Length: 456
Image (cartoon, rainbow, N blue to C red):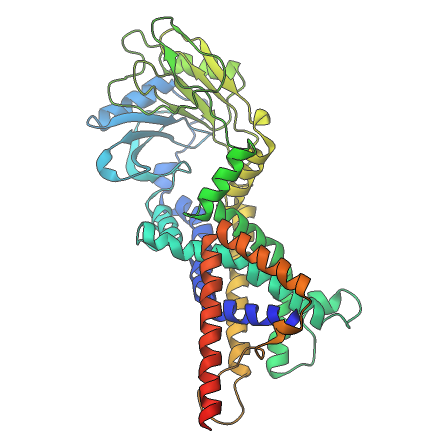
């Protein structure tokens, strides 16, 4: 089977590597955007901590933001998560686009408005990071552009595992771990390039497999199959109930509603019998929801306040509670510990993929991993160039393994391989389409070679 694996690794490396290279470069930029964001928007994100002065009531901070942005629809509030951090008040505007809102930053000690910026997604990405995020996600081409990243994620694990199998077989005769994990000394030319390529690939393997798997979870086509599978095995992420019965004045039990509240402009905290944000925060703290919380306002007269922890540096701080806006009674609670195991793993995986889990160490690891992938791709193309014919065309390049080796493989192994390819091609459609493309290119090259042989 080695020649077949080698041909697959060759074609995937040549034809998919450009997409992997784009994903690696943009992913590296995205991982670096977190510390960059803190530097660029330091005036909006941080404030000096006055000695001996406590933060003002949250209602007063939000009131200052509403006064500074009177035409907006108040939707969410991110209270200051730590000393020296501003409070972020979000306003919806349909003209901004999906998942985007205007963030007003307020000094929690003085209620001074520090500025307004566009905020994107649940991570609260500000303009620079949001731009890099969309560049990494779809190259600013919209939904069609997402195909590039899905193609990269669909084939990254294939290239990585195929490379590992080839490297293990080549290094099988080397005793000890050094020959597997470190480049061999004293080599020159293509053998030196291959040695470095293989060693870096081994060190990067687990990280690349992880990024491939987590990247597919929110892709367009494979992501739908992943979501369906999670639903079938009851591994979807639950949500706290966000609706109430206005006539009864209390909420329903359970998580069947799975709703999410979004402010519609008609609800103002503390007005018309509303309990207000200060009492809401007291109730949330009593329920143990206090780490880096996000407050979502009621959607309408049937909506409840939702206070959810958003400490993605350590996702176990993801408890949430919903509170009746008129009575202050707890409608529902949901602890991260009660999530299905698959939902917990998904939460950890997505946050680690985005560089949020554990903060800076996660981001530095992603930067190193993306740099390693870039070097792997460069070394891969260099090996391709170094395998070019010594004589003949000046611009000749390396050829894949000779065709037809699959005929020597055991029929049972081929049948299993074909079944696995069909199943994977259905579950990960861009892997299947890529495989068909590789076969078409291979058949075309074979036909051209036969014609040339007949002519000669």
